[in-house]
Image (cartoon, rainbow, N blue to C red; front, side, top):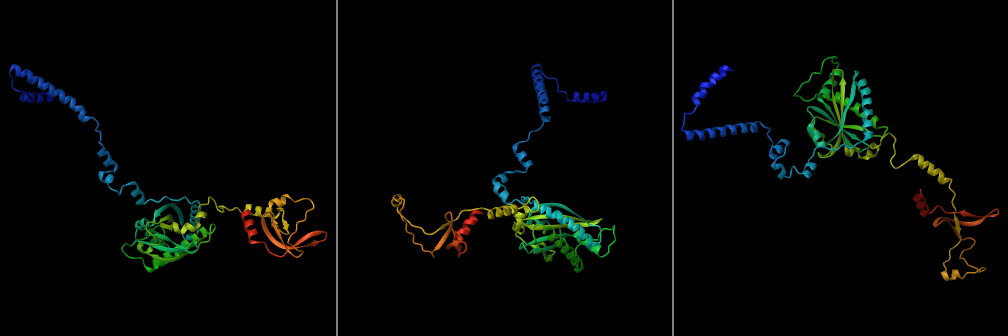
Length: 374
């Protein structure tokens, strides 16, 4: 510290101003003190925390003036152009794919004669066009048809799984990763072996959907270019299921894509919380209602004839008056239940009772009334 003061002392002496007059000295001293005070007050302000203005905050958040003025970043346009699709919760579909994982674990073990583990990564919703653009190439895309649903689906096998399956089926050694050769198309042998594996997966998918509904998945074609595997419009929503297949140190991924249009015929079934749930119908209640209807007692009336009379004439009827009906012994008698006509027949006698023999089926009006009642 002593050396520093000694070094600074000559510098101060060199920078010291020459002596001035007495009047000028007072003014110079006052100006020097003001400059020193100003520098001391400015130093804390320079070191104080800097406050960002609104433009800097907008730039950090990703907004700009052009965004506010343009129509592409408006709320409605952002919703229309959004690539995210809300995943409709389909509880039964998740159960179906869990069942598919168990079936594939067994069938692929038998297919490859190796220890195979299948796991379900996730289920998500995506635009069909976005999915085609996100497929890592090279890959094999299998287009299959759901016959009962009258629509198509897409199954994608990535490159790692293709080479792993070929290596396993052709006797590759365990403990060594499959050799990948980039820059060439898949050979006929590779496509045939992968096609056999895809047929096994589609057969398992049929069994997975069988408790819910009968669906036959038939392989339509195999493509290597996503442009030729278009089964829906780019903006259509679809459900994407990612399956991971591990064969010890080898493996890959299978992605199953089902458009919502394919699942629309069985959407009510997929909305069930558990297998066998019914919407709007209850078989137990229907059978109970049918049993009670068969045992229900109802009053019916046999109408011989109808006669229209003025109300005044009806009010003047007295005991002993005779009313003439236009009906003979062989006239048809109408059987009614309240205001609803049921059928017709002829009057007769059975023992000591008056009976009615029916000679016509139930009328359409009676059937409609019974249907409304049930």
